[in-house]
Length: 433
Image (cartoon, one colour):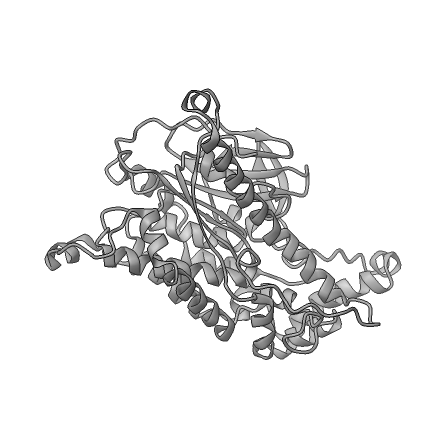
């Protein structure tokens, strides 16, 4: 349940003001699907410029999970220049290829995949003979190298000190204890929360937290993190994430923008009857990943809306006596089925990856049984990423009036001095995060 944290004390930081509602941003997981978030952010940056609302970052509280944690960390590192941060994200995602995220050459794909196939086919005998203990289906060392060059996580502390950022939260799931853990960094007084099978820990966020949060189960290896003085293995934060919106609320958000990665606004797929063929491993894996990445967010959005409706029915005295408080909510999610979109771009995957996925049952194009759901999490290629970014932008601009009302932005921009605008922009993303 979204029990509200105590309302935070008023901020004296230069970049943040308590005269306006504090806005939280929720960026969830989904592998390559997270490119959609970048399109939404680009459209929001455009609407913000149109409104002339350039004084501070629109998101003082940011919560990221899985691939959404990468986008969240980028915004946090550049909280002093939202436009530059978004420009950097667009440039990063548009330049991605599969090889930027995981090793996709033929030898590496066969080597990593063969370990899994040996375990699945001949089981313990081969495992004992070779002493092979496969960590994951794919090796995501390129992602660590990319993020090491791209992000300076130490800059988060500078953004907090400068008052440009209120809090950043990244989530991971402990394979060691089964706990879902939200690691957060802030200079404000926040009492770490503890719920059934989920907890919050204040920490100095690092690249290791980012790698842990984005370690898709089975596909990417787990990451060692320290928790309460002990090392634990962590994987993707979308696992066991029953309340994705909760961190932003606990960290003090009065209103929340949620950017989804599918299902909430997607049209229903065409129903087809079952065939005689048993579902492939790819189809089952895609179904499982969609459950991990997408379902919890939809449930939590409905829960928050139900709480808001209930609070609206209570008399003022009753509302003041409860720890719950209404949270204004805006949800932006894909208007197209991303599974189908991924199926249309399956051919852009490297041949070695296509061969590996075919062994799991990926086949066909644009069909529910083709394994396209699984592909959608791994298709870090310009053709698919570009369509997702464009879709995010068009979906957001289609809700222009709703976005403007949410942020309190005017439909028309006030007259501004161009010289002051030039002075207001920082040196830009090239200054480095």
